[in-house]
Image 1 (cartoon, rainbow, N blue to C red):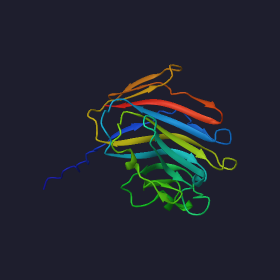
Image 2 (image 1 turned 30 degrees about the vertical axis):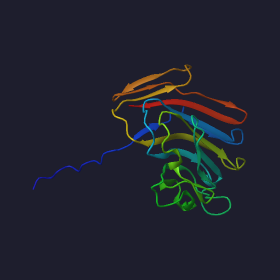
Image 3 (image 1 turned 90 degrees about the horizontal axis):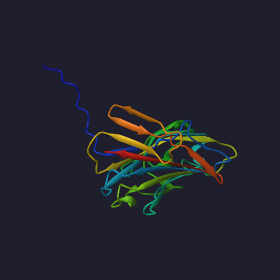
Image 4 (image 1 turned 30 degrees about the horizontal axis):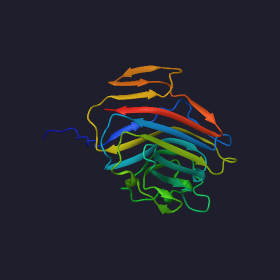
Length: 220
């Protein structure tokens, strides 16, 4: 019998990833609230399904964090996690690594426990034990400015960094190229690799204890 290589499942979504300057956006007592934008301009379709991925959010005692996603163009917003985990102060575990928020998940983000850290896997979003739904964005245009906001509710004891996050949308757009453009022309860099083009070092600035960062992601 012939041995055939396994068939890779088709990816039926488009993914857009942040472009945050290393080492990441710091979360501490001087930066209680941080925000990062992914600006999409290449997928002029309406959302039928979406997921949010925390590829790397390093933070001790993740239960301190309130994490929100907002479509800046429409004002629609959802709390992804707030005091995630058990107890009054949420999970004392560390770090979100490849943590996917999806309405299709069977477990709530509130199910995480300290022993699971770093917290990885598929969870549905929740606002302090009340389930929330990413379907609130259904029907809105994918071409929008998408803002992730992270608030540390107890910054005096625990710090961290937002390093990378992503958005997944259906319907999928065609093509393979990806382009990231910084909102600033300062420290402009470029890299061309594997049919992908990356522009900009995506600098950030601090104002009134809030760290704000903007990137433009195009996946065509």
